[in-house]
Image (tube, rainbow, N blue to C red):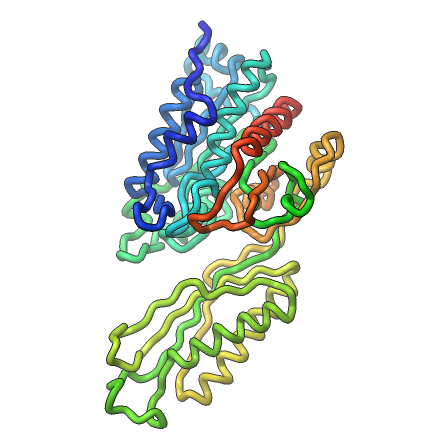
Length: 410
């Protein structure tokens, strides 16, 4: 029986547009396992059901919908058989639905909506897959709630154990283990290739006048917590010379990170800060800042962080404060499968470019799953911001490009 296909790309995009959007900034708040993100996951499941796809989920919040008419028929004849138990050749596409705080519309959801639209296009072409095709939605890719980027894909691949993850807490003190059942995951056990489509988070494709490109690899990157401690005191009665103010040490460290990154042509950002006691009329007792650092090589990353830490320590000794640095997460350089990238890019004339942003694709590639990333042009290059954008024509070109790639792999 032929399925009735649901909404096209534009209609699906319109469905997602209002979910989790701030009326003030126009940005998105789709934090993992909270109402807006859960609404999007429910929407995804409904879209998959409308396409007759078989949906599976694990205890880590990840979801995969499978299209494989041959396997579906076999299972109908042998209900006790696990349809994926002996298969290791499945193709997986998809992305994530969560966002950074006050983020853009395209980072993540573009890959999910494009994957659904690509399945529609493949069916319209009369394609019948000879291997399973999955559409995946990975949980907590941004790390905006529990502080660890690509959390769902790390857990699904075994790069992170549940014992280590379950005690992670959000800003309200809620533990991940209180939100998810955890356990183990076999969602990726049959996957032989992963292709993720994503909006470009930069201007490389704009400069090349190309609507679509492929990723060559991901820069190594990390998140580092800087804890600056001093002595709380009265903002009015304490003489400047008598203060041990960690805010001064923090401020100098922010400037040092900016200078070191500019000198080395790398990336360094302090984008999050917490202050105690956080009073207008009080010298702080503690300032905690989180450094996001990204570099063209692992040696460059280590050198950058070491330089920032050294300058922070030197300044702390002058301010009468102390600083401790903790690496909360560090991801090494990832090179996507070069043979796969070449086979996809060369016949189509697509440029192959690096990216400084982390992605679930990088986690799967590092886990040994041959992976490719498609980028769709971003006219301004702005990302992780309400100003993030992509032209509809480029998005539709991306859908066709993804469908072409998947058809070749299937």
